[in-house]
Amino acid sequence: MANTPSAQKATRKIAARTATNKSRRSRMRTFIRKVEEAIASGDHAAASTALKAAEPEISRAAGKGIVHANVAARKVSRLNARVKALAV
Image (cartoon, rainbow, N blue to C red; front, side, top):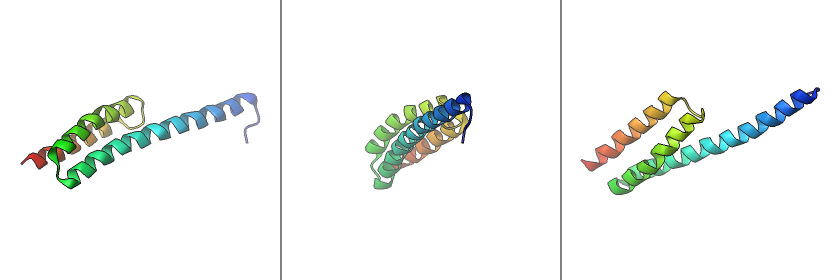
């Protein structure tokens, strides 16, 4: 348990930041899941639309430090490749 006022404040700040980050991470994962579900259904149009919505969310998560920039780029790239493969 934090004893000093500054340590107590730090604990409160960490708790608030954790809640915000958890929400952002969950939001990103939801958008990714929507793309994956559209890919699984085989609907190219729906998958493209879902990817267009997910891409800025993933980038925003990277910008906020929720995921590393390279992780975000890899996720977008792999989702894009899977959506592109549906068109064939």
